[in-house]
Length: 334
Image (cartoon, rainbow, N blue to C red; front, side, top):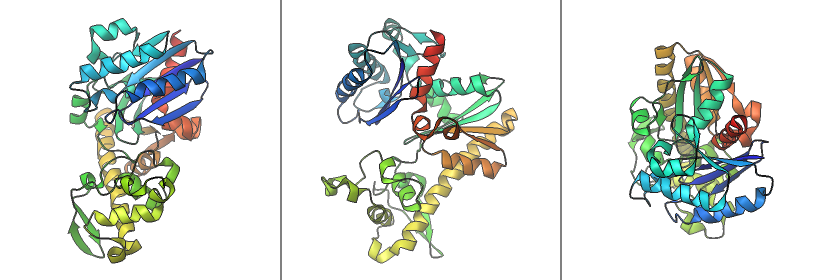
């Protein structure tokens, strides 16, 4: 059994090459030591069948670390303390040992999208690969099986290959500075009142089980997670985005806000995809991740073919695709 691990800032995802998947909400910024507990439990679950472990990460960016270098080394050391036969994927899509991470930590930063894109490039020659997760969106041009994207997140933000918004953890106020309700336009509050997960829960695009982090007002729902992640609670949070409440705004008003959240994300993604389409002549979008429904609508806007990896692999694997991809790539390499 080959195991892939994707350590993010909020979630650690673990998958086997056989398709077993586990996603654990483990916010590193709150307690970076939590990773040791998560990995210890994973080791117990999958041993002794483990032949090798492949690893990618994005959690090094957490603000509990003073630098990405420190973050990479912390994550590497946590993995090394739990697993033997450990391989780290670098920015050149090569598997390397922990000693190589010590020598050049930044070569291993923000590599989870590379694992996914490499697996997709082996299967589809000329596509725009899209992965919409809880926090970010990757938009990767693949031409003749070659990844055309930049390797550093800084450069990917510049080239629109990385969009720093996702469908669960993104502050609604970062997407909308104004909303229209009942024909009138209102400015939004910049407070963290609601997340994109609230919008998609209200619209029925996500379930309470998909809401994989705490809500902005989770402190008010101690031991009442079902109530916290109900549609009613989500509507109340959305109403606060315009300094209102559900009594004043009503269900219809909160639904209008949720619809505009979705429209903003579709428009931002379709604009990035249009750049890739025009630059490389790409006519096919291949998508994975919990936000695949956004990619489907963006492909419809551009009138290009859409291929769903959740239809091919199942929704569970699709939601943890980098972990699955690194497991499959390691299996093939060995």
